[in-house]
Amino acid sequence: MMIPRKSVAPFDFEGLEIRDFTHGRDVNSSLAEITVPVGARHRTSWSERSDKYYFGLAGKLEFEIEDRRFQLAAGDLCIIHKGCRFSYENGSTAVARVLLVHTPSFDISSEVFENAHIRGTEAKRPRAGLPEEEGMKIEYLPIGFVRSPHQTTRGVPIQPSRARGIKGTVELEERYAEGLADLDGFSHIILICHLHKAADFKLKVVPYLDTELRGLFATRAPSRPNPIGLSVVRLHAIDGNILSIEGVDLLDGTPVLDIKPYVGDFDKEIEVRCGWLDQVKDRETVADERFEK
Ligand SMILES: C[S@@+](CC[C@H](N)C(=O)[O-])C[C@H]1O[C@@H](n2cnc3c(N)ncnc32)[C@H](O)[C@@H]1O
Image (cartoon, rainbow, N blue to C red; front, side):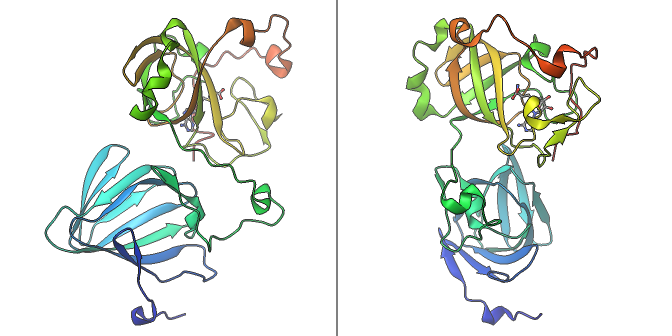
């Protein structure tokens, strides 16, 4: 299949000029050319379901990926993995152009922007019959991010109870800081997070602490249909919008969806059965890469 450049009309996206060569075509990856005028910026976002490859054609761009900065010039390739937080801008004095490849192909409904979730009118729908098809897609934006010493899943404690002494912070968006009033009276908080580096889920998994396949929902495996993590961590201090915590079993950069106080009276059950976990002898404390994408 041949697609001549002049057959692809550009469209404006927040000041960036995009030629989407593969739009509407049945392809497994997609390719677009993006022209970034001087001073233009792709606002902070992350991709829920695709890796992105930016190949520099002309000019220079400054990328910020997970708080690290990179300069992209003509001939350079910048790879942004699925789920990574990124932005880029043209701070130079010349127009920049890049080729952008998405794998799997681009789907605007899967693009998450810092302050809004963009839903495209022509977004491809996934398989028929899923709740999303019936308008049940639920969208949240992070209220903040975890800062922790853990950069990859290998070696990360499998639960806060195995992470004593491991300290980190939650950097809450400043606009939510007022909501932290009175939280400093609680010794522990519940962090509800999006486990953004989790691999696709399987319904039977060999969990940490076991050698047998178990039903996913009888485990705390991070790879789930909705990869939500629930961690009860010690709260040491609150300084403005920064919470100092201990017992961190979460990767650096994990998006936080909610914070709740841990309340023994509500959350602690006395008589509990723990199914297969009651039988485990293995007291493994740290993770490997089995659930990382
Ligand atoms: C077993 S999960 C438990 C998380 C939470 N305490 C829960 O029970 O929902 C913890 C493991 O998930 C992995 N992990 C932590 N943060 C993650 C993230 N942002 N994305 C994917 N995996 C993550 C690490 O390997 C860590 O050991």
